[in-house]
Image (cartoon, rainbow, N blue to C red; front, side, top):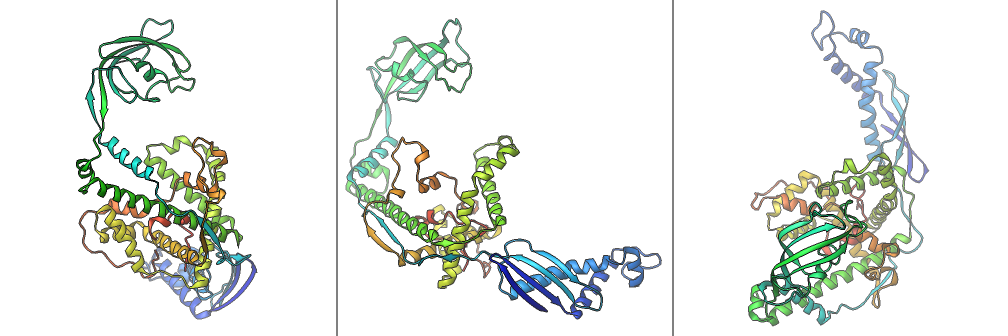
Length: 509
């Protein structure tokens, strides 16, 4: 087979392929035998009729087209492999000549993986973050959270205070109405006395009341109340307090430490909390550094992304988010008409483009520096997740292979390994968080949110490892070996920096 390659555009390669006459003759003979088994020729059993009669029955070009439909894809695949091309979409094929007794000649316009060019040294990056320190107040807050989780309730003979729990009977009437509105009455209603637990102002009116007391008070429903008939309407409530309970918090002592875990003393518990907080802080710091490095590498990368890749990634994201919505009980088919689907697709374009650029860029870095992964590295990741969910690693591995999640996991491991390498090349210093990555103060609206915060707010890739772990039985036998060309994610502290990598177009080495 003769292959001529011409490259006129960055992401398009033109091939002219000539398949020798011997291979053409063999393909035509195979096509004839296949067709003859399907055609009824009077006087002959299927597969036994002469070729001339079969061709007369199906038409002169039918057998040629059957042979062509098999020969062209096979020859094209061989040509693409011989030329080491990474085809990303269906090629356009034009047959130049195809006759019995002659060679087959066809041309193919092949869309290939875009090439990334760097406008600077992608290894020369700088990142900074503050030194990891744990504020003692954070330890106290964690212990207080544990106390709140283990709080009990005790009946008290005093007036209701903020944070108490009360059992009530109540009825509510709209202004000018004699009967309670629908849903406006309750008996033995359990209420936590805290702002926002019911209609604004309701809980506040209970403060100061005692067991056995009754009270009337006026409240206006919010304008955006979920029941349209009540929205913005003034109402009068009658309340009877039947019981008041106060929250009782456990003392912070060695008994408390033993109750929350395998600790002997409060000092042991405090030490463990500090270690956990330190690990979380170090993970967050490392994540911040890697995000800075990745962003700098992407800024230096120039690549023309074909529209077909962008559209495919948009479709992938839409399917992924739709699955998440369905998992939350939403009926996606009722939420979106065609116009909303189009608007949604357009809104995902920037995210899809960034994911593809990240994938292509990391893949280019990997190839240039010989960064590869082994099946053992994938297995290490699987073992970690299996231990987390207390299931058999072999069962998780098998589930990943069956569901197609193995390749996604391989891409994650590879992407993190590339980021490991870039992290080693970068200059990292201690210092304040760059303004672009600084956490946004609570209460600010989302319009000024940094790019990083926006990414955190979006749904992420399906957790293939988690799903596999959940589906895996607690005890399972060993499974088949993974495919040799399968590729693998590293520790969770590096995940965010690789969440831009598309599942279909994951970085390769």
